[in-house]
Amino acid sequence: MLVNLPDVAPTSSSVIKSVGILTTDEISSNIDFKKEIELVLGIRHSKIYSFRKFDKNNSISYKHFSEKDVNWQGDFVQPNIKVFLEEPFDLLIGFFESNHLYLEKAVMLSASTFKVGISGVNSKLYSLEILEAPSQIQSFLKELKRYLEILKKVKN
Image (tube, rainbow, N blue to C red):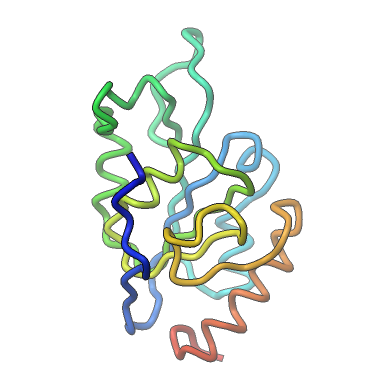
């Protein structure tokens, strides 16, 4: 599924006005991403989508997807995740620290042209990687802001 990635991820030179975040349910339940992004980056328009393991007791959610939302061909079939992936965010943050087939596929299929993630996951997915533990969201976002200022993608 992830075999045909280009050697260099495409990037955009526009200023960031919207942010999409792909992460795990474990991480998103412990961190208020919207608040942190608004505080550190000063960006108000953000959306988060999390992967959680399938459980028949979980209700359908507009904020979560599971392995059941991917068909045998590797295509996302659940409408909510498809809409999220089709949204052309100015910045997509892949916030997970180890290889994760479903999240990596989602990052790859995202319409966002500037993708940032945690270093060591899959360098072909991202325009920029930051070496930081997911528990250190403040540090991750401050480092991200530093690079975005250098690239003139956010205002000082």
